[in-house]
Amino acid sequence: MVAFDGSFHGRTMGSVALTATEKYRLPFMPVMPDVRFAQYNDIASIEATITDDVCAVFVEPVQGEGGLRVVSDAFMHRLRELCDQHSALLVLDEIQCGMGRTGTLWAHEPYGVRPDMMAIAKPLAGGMPIGALLLNECVAEAISYGDHGTTFGGGPLATTVAKVVFDRISDPAFLERVREVSSYLDEALHDFAAERADTVIELRGRGLMRGLKIHGSAADVRMRGHDAGVLLAVAGADVVRMLPPLIVEPQHIDEVMAVLREIM
Ligand SMILES: Cc1ncc(COP(=O)(O)O)c(C=O)c1O
Image (tube, rainbow, N blue to C red):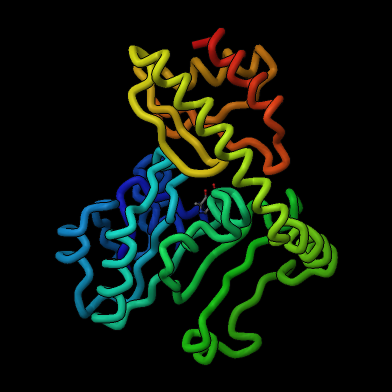
C-alpha cells in the first residue's frame, strides 16, 4: 500500500500504519507492514513508488493534520492513471475534507477523478459518531454481507441522524452558500496575509478548510484565540488551522478576523 508524507488516516491499526507522522505511528509499532510513503504532490515520487506490487493508494485530497495542503490537479490525474496502469485501488480519505467542507459535496469533485473507495466520517451525522466506506462496483463485488462488521455499525440512531445531515449538506442551495461564504473568507484571509506579510508565510487549503502557515508558534495563536473566544486548531508547529462551521455567516468571519488582527 502507498500513502503520503504528512498523511493522517487515523489511529486504528490499519490506518495508523498509513499515517506518515511518526508521533502517531511509532507508539503503535509494530504496525501493518508493507506500506510505502511517497511525496505528496510530487509526480516523480508516485511514478517511482506505484508499481505492479501496489494494491492500493491512500490520499487526502486536502490534508488536514498534514498542514492544509491541497492535491494539485496534475497530481490527482496522474494518481488515477498510475492506479489504473498497475491495477491498484485509489482510496480517498474524505473524513475531514468531505461533506461540503471545501465547497463541493466531495473534495475530489473539482478534479473530475473517480476514486475506487472513499472513507467519510467526521461531519456525516453532525457530531454523532459514525463512519462509512463507499466502494465502487468492482470492490463491492468482492465483499459480501457479513465479511466485515462492527458492534455499533449501521446503528439506527446514528444512521437516521446521518441521513438528515446528508440531505441538508448535499442540498445544492446549501453548497452554493458554503461556496459564497468561502469566497468571503478567502478574500478576508488574503487581505490579512498581505497586511501581515512579515508573519504569514502562506495561505493554504480550500473552502472552509483553511490554514495560515506562519513565522512563530501556531499553538500560541490557538491559545490566544481561545482566550479571545475563537476556536482555532493547529496543523503541526507552524500552521494555524481554521475549520468554521458550514453555516458560518460573513459577520462571524469579520469577528474572527478582528480577533486574528489583535492576537497575531
Ligand atoms: C483525514 C483523516 N482521516 C481519518 C481520521 C480519523 O481518525 P481517528 O481514527 O483518530 O478517528 C481523521 C481524524 O482526524 C482525519 O483527519
